[in-house]
Length: 267
Image (cartoon, rainbow, N blue to C red):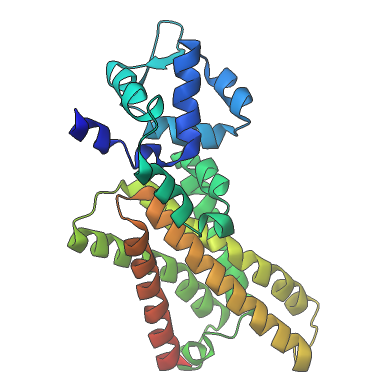
């Protein structure tokens, strides 16, 4: 039985999932809406957590959630008898949670199809904004005609290259993952760039010169956005795969190294 309990340590390392199980245990059976209101969660966040608890919960004839047989065992072993130090350690150890807004990931994980459409739309907008207003791929422009088109294509392909590298790395490391969730987790890293791209796009379309201090500020903002984007990708890998924190960080650092090598070659 101890082996069965240990199986769910990572699932229950999240305090929200512990609260969901406790609530269901106390109520006997409870609706999705009641759980959401009781714990002040968004639809996306609750969908994501319930998906992680599929072996511990089941639905009754009214479509309410109740504990499965395995859930009753886990509640007794891991929740009511809270003698599981691993849960506390996992909760305290992941500082990136404080920097990357986990609820944002829960929202996107809640509806994978919708999220993939939305995130790819954001990628297209990002690629277009980089294409028309960004000079980071200027050496590529000088080799090939088309300037903005080339920049946009490079920016778009860049993210699918990220996804491919992470996919191959997970295969090599023999780590479990779900491809749609991995795709979403990586592409959420697009979002921080809008802090840089929106003002850059406005400056471009208003023909405002970006020399001197404006250019310096934009460069600083770009670096900050790049760091945040990498943190988002690391968090996305950690939440969508069976990797631990350190493996997720290593994968994120590999992406930074690849970016650095690319920039050294092309700029």
